[in-house]
Image 1: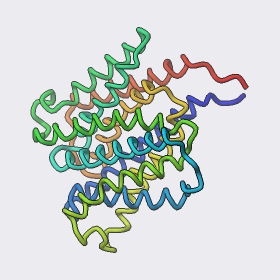
Image 2: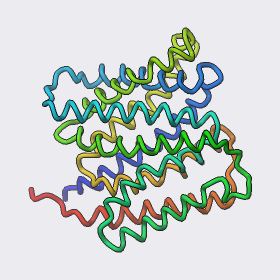
Image 3: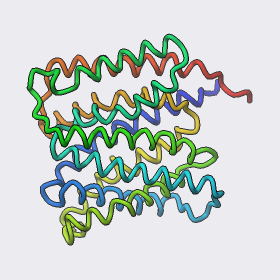
Image 4: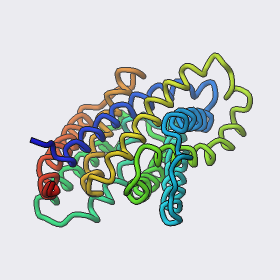
Length: 289
């Protein structure tokens, strides 16, 4: 029996989420050396080099409309990373991802069609509200500028979903290589302006390469394979697992604490993600062989 392509895409997206949050924790370790913009530039530039050499996008011919989608996809990715890493200078990883989730959640709300979809969205919103700092009895040290930057990253994340799906239609991992390369071109001037020669310090390149592979190269390649096979609203709700994964990664790797109410919020979001995976994926029948 042939496996359902949507369910395979769900597994790829989930794996990419785990890599992303692990890489984000490692990236935060680079902040004292190169700053948030430097870490962003290092992450995207090294990831672009890996993807370009691995998938050789120059061997493929893209039409004008697909090139436009790729450039928009890369621009959204670059801006998303710059805003998100800037937010991490001011707020914990789990809270930053929870706030950033407003982008995918907006995509999910826009695509809702059936009553059961609304149930999962309401559950995700409830969990999201529990993750906000003012809902945690002041246990989270949150700066308003960090909240603002994370919300900006969320808006860019919505664009990443929409343009990534358009760019990926009929494509493959080579599209991710072009998108990450575009994002790197956008982020590199900011990183160079703030970090300077520290970006090419051989001592930090191993950690930078690990961050690039974990948080950019591998997840973006997996997303590009998965996005053409998965509805935008399903991808958006699946992303609701990101805050929980981020908080766990921040706790284990960075030692960032999690308030009890925030744990309940993460559980609600994870339940919404699982429910959406089990129900929305089944709404689209498998293609006829």
